[in-house]
Length: 191
Image 1 (cartoon, rainbow, N blue to C red):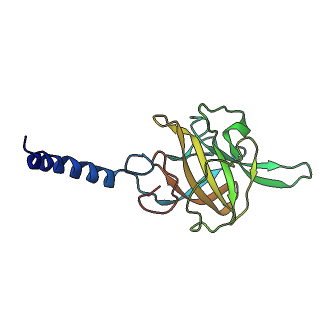
Image 2 (cartoon, rainbow, N blue to C red):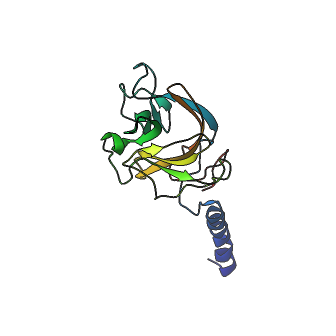
Image 3 (cartoon, rainbow, N blue to C red):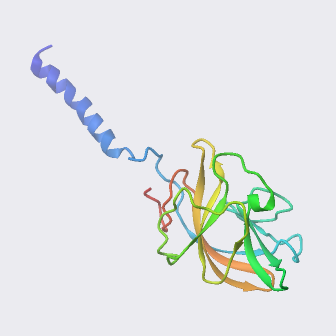
């Protein structure tokens, strides 16, 4: 083959490689398909509410009844303290004696930033095995059980406590349902 023809034959290959490199994801994750959305959720306490009241929170499906499924990240309850007062708490699975398979237990991490100011979830630093006291206005990161089995990773979200009424808690939440992504802003995540 003539040297010019050989060089010309390499141009489409070089161009294709350059284009594929330009389109590849630096974190080696598939393109995100789920849009991060803000939602409002209400849970009833584990104790003192009808059994039909959802007390657990599943990061992908939202509120669920803890008598019907153990596929939740945390549950809500109101505890009576030794001094006779009450404390509202979120209970990660391990705090309820439920084990999780995989390398990461579901947990919560309190944050000082505003809800909108929480933009990315870290991998570690979550309370996984004890009650997390909550108050109106507090914000938390949420790490799920290992849901993305193909990658062996959890999902991440954030929540802000909006209010209490009787035996319920209402919070706003944003969940990133894209496996391997930790961005916590509305829309399609980048990382």
